[in-house]
Image (tube, rainbow, N blue to C red; front, side, top):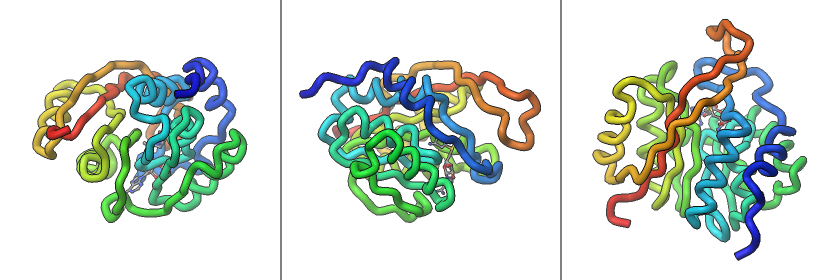
Length: 209
Ligand SMILES: C[S@@+](CC[C@H](N)C(=O)[O-])C[C@H]1O[C@@H](n2cnc3c(N)ncnc32)[C@H](O)[C@@H]1O
């Protein structure tokens, strides 16, 4: 096992990356913050779920989670997004941090994705604009991987909803960590220039694992 890149160093590297060029509200294109992305990927790595493994980033956007997994020693990363324009940004970001060769970029709807991963890292659409998008992403993650690290908007009843959904999909939640996340006000309906939201970070395993 090689020495892990420190979490703070990872966050600093991620902070140099480009974001969504023209965020689409319909696709819920808001970015994970550098700090939360670094925490998610670093936590996955500390649990032994990244180094030398195959990691998928579902709905990768500009690619922070995929790139973080590559920087933390994933053997192969697959970054999927339905928006081919944003994948170009993710490719440039990966080139900038020297991990382009470790990542396969796939323009596809997650619903139709076939694949096999050790680990999924994802910041899903919250399901506000696209009804049940979070369910589609969780279903796919549990179908293709043993372990999933997933970010969801914290809300009243949100934890029991996600925990039940995961159980119905054949998984179990092994922990939930609440974090605050700075969100750039890039989408039309955001009024403040930048605001902070509460998010829940889940680790999910397949029930039989
Ligand atoms: C909340 S953003 C997260 C982006 C990135 N993971 C991040 O955290 O910065 C959700 C992403 O999912 C993508 N997306 C939405 N619906 C999708 C679908 N059905 N299949 C694949 N990607 C989708 C959007 O284009 C967007 O980039």
